[in-house]
Every structure is written in C-alpha cells, then in structure tokens.
Image 1 (spheres, rainbow, N blue to C red):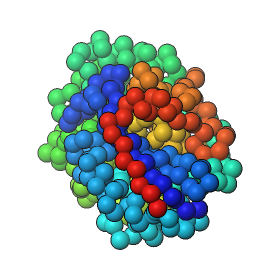
Image 2: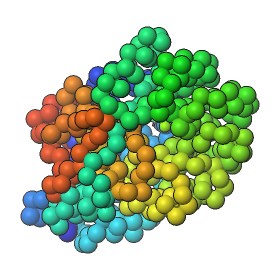
Image 3: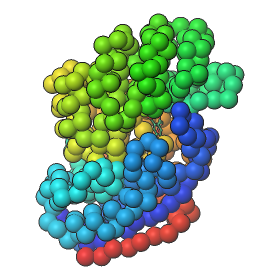
Length: 369
Ligand code: OSB
Ligand code: MG
C-alpha cells in the first residue's frame, strides 16, 4: 500500500456528562480524526485521543497536531507499506509521542485489514466473538448521584465498575459502595493521586475486596509501585506508567503491578499493544483495555484489540450512549447483557457518519503525496 492523501479533521464534541477524576473534570473533548487514503480510494480511519491539557500524560492534542503534520505524516506519505508493523521502522527516529504515532498507525491498521478483506480483530489475531464491557464512573458530588449511576450501569449489565478515587474521597466512598453492593466486582482508579506517605490510607482500601487499584502512585515511578505492591494484598494495575512495551517489561520485572490497563493511544499503537499482550501472557499478568472518553473510531480499534484472548478482564469499553448524544461512527456501540459484539466486516467494522463528522469539525487540513 502507498498512502496518497491524509486528511486531519480537528473536531470538538461535548460529553453527555462531565467526567471527574482526581486531577480534572473533562467536559468537552477535542480530537484529531485521521483519514488516510490509498491510490485506489480505499480509506482508513484513526483517532488521536490526547487531551487539551497534559494532566494525564505529557502529550496534548496540540503537540500531536505538530508531530502529525511536521514529522509523522511526511514519514509515511507515499512510502511502500506492506504491514502496519512497517511503521515501527518509519517512526523509529521519533522519540516517544505515542498518542500522535498511534493515531496515524490506527488508520494504517484499518487500511491493512480492509485491503486484505479482514476484520481488524482477525487481522490482529483476535478470536472472541464478543467482549465483556465494564464501565468507568467519575467522581460525583453526592452519594445519591453515584449510587444512581451505578444502578443504571448494573441495569445495562456491565460486568464490573471502576470508580475514581483520591485522598479524602476514597475509604468512605468505597466502603459505602461495598456495603450497598456486597458482591459487585469493583475496582478503583486513583490517576496518580497518592504517594507512599499515604500508605495507611492505601492499606485501609485492602479490606474491600477490590479487583485492583489502578495507578495509585506517580505516573513515572515503577520503583515505588513495586514497593507498594509488596505492602498491599490488592493487585496494582498500571495505566499512566506504561507507555511502551519496554515500560511493561520493566514493570513486570520490578514487580510494579499484577495487571495492566492497555490503551492503544497511550502505548503508541496496535503493534506495540500486541507486544505488550505477549509479554503479559508470558508473565501471567492480567490485561484489560482502557478508554480515553473517545469517539467510536478509537473505541472500534479497542474492541478489536479486546477480542484477543490475552485480554482476560472486562475493560473500560462502554456504549456510545454512555458518552455521546451523537457519535461520528455508525452503528452505535451497543452493550447488551454486558457484552459488545465484535464486528466481522472488513476493517474496524464501523462506518464514518460524514455528516456528524462535519458538524463537529473546527478545521480540516489536507496533505497529498
Ligand atoms: O484513567 O482510565 C483512566 C478517562 C480519561 C483519562 C483517563 C482515564 C479515563 C477513564 C474513562 O477512566 C475511560 C473511558 O470510559 O473511556
Ligand atoms: Mg486510569
């Protein structure tokens, strides 16, 4: 394949409900949607999931725009590409910037699958026909609001719920939820809100039978997570700390975690995600696929990845209606009895709603070979 044209659709979408975590409240989402076109007109789609502010990882939608326009697009345009893994070599001169790389790589994987008449899931090696859906619930102002959100999620059949926590909104919050839902699979995500000085608080969380605690400590500290894991019965899951297969390998070797939240954008793409899955399978580390409050395009890629057998826990992959009044893909992502069907048609299996895409577009940039 040779890519002859790339269009960047800079879009803005309003979340149905603001999403609050330990550091920020996300209300509006900016995305860069990547449309990559071959000579024969075949089109692949990718999505850049970085936020406007670098609170989660260091990239922003603006650093990604720069990387894409000035570095990554020129490096792939009109180059012979036999397999998406070829991008690893084309991107090798570029340090980090995983979300920028992943956005473009996602479009190439979609193209590759379509060109070969395969679903993206099949192209990756995924075998599951349906995947288990979990839901991530943000911090709420009141207990009533939290309980009603959980009740609604359970009505829709979600297999597990993830709650956001931070110092002061943790022990009593988890304790109340555990009392109300004695057998519910619950996990907690701190988004790096704690330090080792909070050891007592973290110990207190050990008694609520949490499936895991996600990213309790600093985004860049594998060593302290290893110390903490020795102290806790609850499994540690790493999110922000894992930005590559190399990070995953080090975390495994240090004993920094027993679970990994795998996000395609955060680790630089699907090819790197497959490497991480292999490492986890070999080491007996649990894996599930996380989310970035993203559009249907990026979720479609995640659904394909989650169809791999090595992904052995329900992810943060919820229905379109959990996030958006109107999405940019057709059909909607539907959760039925806690499962999402893995599409079998070529590529991601989701089509672009061009009208909706245009309605959300702030500006568009076109690049040609
Ligand atoms: O920490 O997993 C996280 C959303 C934005 C940024 C980071 C995280 C999250 C979520 C929600 O927890 C994931 C989703 O439902 O898309
Ligand atoms: Mg997280």
